[in-house]
Length: 212
Image 1 (cartoon, rainbow, N blue to C red):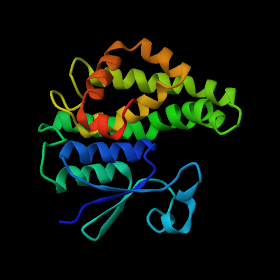
Image 2 (image 1 turned 90 degrees about the vertical axis):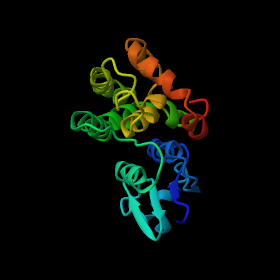
Image 3 (image 1 turned 180 degrees about the vertical axis):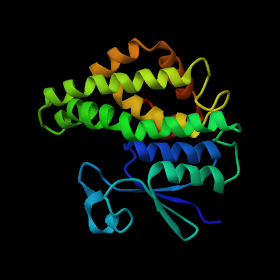
């Protein structure tokens, strides 16, 4: 069986989620860099892997895939190691629901409309669009409120063990926490703060996103 290849930028939340899944399964992989800042994801070579110019793209055993949540499910099913989906239908639907919430609501609010204008744009010499950030705050707060509710009193979104949902949420919240707006929201969500602390102790997280 060949070693899987992940195409993308190590700073991408979705690249991180896929790599976290691989690390949790104990699967060695190759990361082929695609520079987000240089917009290499929009170049012809990468568009052949992902026609929408997003990341990551993924190759394994002659098969090519894109879309992080699909890749993560493949990783869980194709490789030995601890299961990253829980056993019961109710627990499994919670994992799937949380992953969908990240893609549909959490990422756009937290990353596209808060982290990027607040942190990334100024780091590249631009100015924050304050109206964009302000408009996104209620949406990010709702995202945080709902994933707090769905976590409940459990240690992880998979219940007693880490799941794909945990690996999908963490990179987004790590970047949200890098903003003043996110810090204020997370200060009001202590159970999520405790969950992040548990996640940050995992060897997979330390390998993929050290210091996040």
